[in-house]
Length: 172
Ligand SMILES: [Zn+2]
Ligand SMILES: [Zn+2]
Image 1 (cartoon, rainbow, N blue to C red):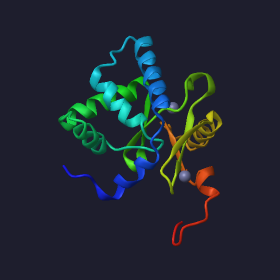
Image 2 (image 1 turned 60 degrees about the vertical axis):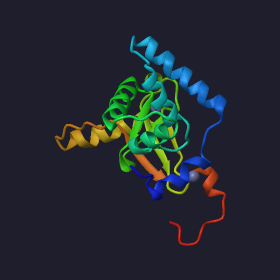
Image 3 (image 1 turned 90 degrees about the horizontal axis):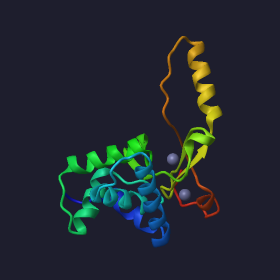
Image 4 (image 1 turned 90 degrees about the vertical axis):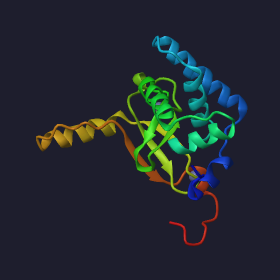
């Protein structure tokens, strides 16, 4: 499997610090323990690759990175770990990019569901609690006698850091 040329360049710039990564791994470990789920070595490795970037990362990029570190896996193993991490809520899926990112929040339940804010320029992803957005979508859909099943809302645009940089030529 070769490294896809279009995405490989971006993530290295957005690596999180080692201490933030450790913190994220420990938080995930705690959440797994609280739910009596097993945070296996593989799940931890996959989570650490996802949490290592401020942006999002696809399953095959995770495979590549683990392979670079000497862990060769079948794609199905990575997908199973990803499923377990999604179920536990420690990562989310960015539908538009078919990629995953580590949950940036501690407790979604108390603050309502988040919308995902995805920067078109640097690829960073953040979350903002916005239960009202979901309430409104549900209300409008039900007004049309439509039963909505909205899990997540993604908003693409430009993050605060990118907004202060001078625009690149040709960029949107
Ligand atoms: Zn989250
Ligand atoms: Zn940005």
